[in-house]
Length: 583
Image (tube, rainbow, N blue to C red; front, side, top):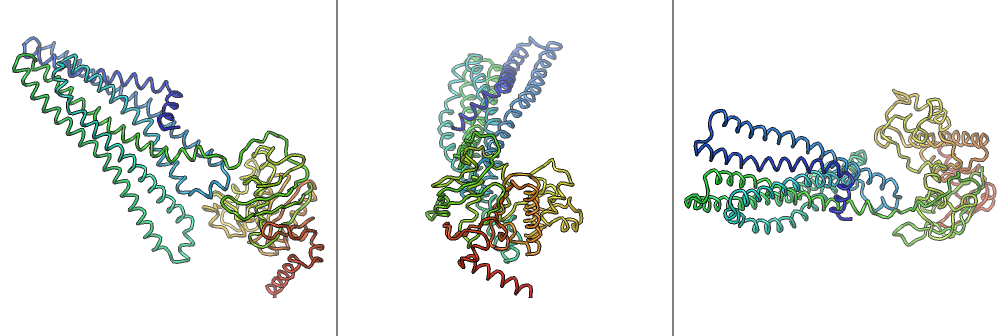
């Protein structure tokens, strides 16, 4: 879909607003072209001594009333037209948000956050201006141009009008040349702003790391360089947009000279009255707006086309995960991985290779292995953040793809390896999974996650703001808040993706004990615990050991110790490390 198709579709949807604005603009244009003719008639009547006294006052009052009517009509069409164009901006931003919220991690691995933010601000604004300002200036300018040329040709003198229009083809040629440069410069300006926006976003997010590494000066120099490039690109776009004005000025100056020369000759030959020449000159002055409007419209449209060229691919990008599931019942039963192989987009190596396992309802599965073994990949496939390359993932009797994404993910509580907290209070972050939860329920979830006592020590307790991404909390506190969030809902499957890595062993033991108590209270609830710390999975019903995506060992804790393989050696090492730390 091109920008013009987008605007046409939007105008059809809001045709009432555009028709009302068009009618008012037509009345404005009609009154505008009638005023010079009225003034010309008044001048001719005064020269002929046929107008004076009260009659003159009434004629002047008529002109004044026409000016007042133009004022109120201009206010009216602005209210109609701009209200409609603002709706387009809101719709585009909503479409962008909805599309981004439906995309999977693979999409965001190829996109920059600052660039996506720029699409929802500068680029959406440029398209909004094309729907509002450009539509206004285009219709108003075209209407005024047609009416003024009609009055000059039919109402005054066609010969003078023809002579006056001679410079305008050269102006049209200049506009064509300028428009091409405006498009390229506008596109570069938007891209430069996007890069600057991305740099600012990354800087603010990582400001503490920059300070620790002493990179403030270097980062400031990079920002200054990028800001200068963005300013230069914007200035180039402004320079080319400013080139419309000299083209208009030269054309109108030449037209004015022709009007005086040809008009004076016609008056000298008694083929035109002074009043008509005055009216014609006023009409020529009214052509200033249509000419400037043409440049303004072309500039806005080119900016809009450049912005739409950046925004459209994101809006029309294929969803990484197709949400085609139809089953509305809640997933339940045994979870199975049947010869599942998977690799991340753009990577040749398999993250999982022919993985087979099953997790019965109410059981706990532990997944361990070295870094990069594929542990988190299992959880991502269960959440359908990615699709399998080979094999099947089923829940009960159905493939997980048979469930709508919302239904599937509502059945899973997931605590990520790096939990994300929003810039809100601790209570609001815990209640994110269940906004209707009472304060008592929130506090109970916090107790299960062993974070309740920490929260009470904060100045405002549960109402303490955590800052952006939970910056005021430690790593362990953020993990426990995320665990409390997961435990606040009663979903049949709990996924912990190394969610205890930042807590001490005593706190880990307390949390695992609370999870065991929850299992007793609801025996049908299943859990998958991914961890580097083997003590977190020691009580699991079954444990998988992965190496480079391949299942190399499996069994209970005691069975794996008896195998004397990777699990056993790692357990001995971690126990020795714990003893040394305790000493």
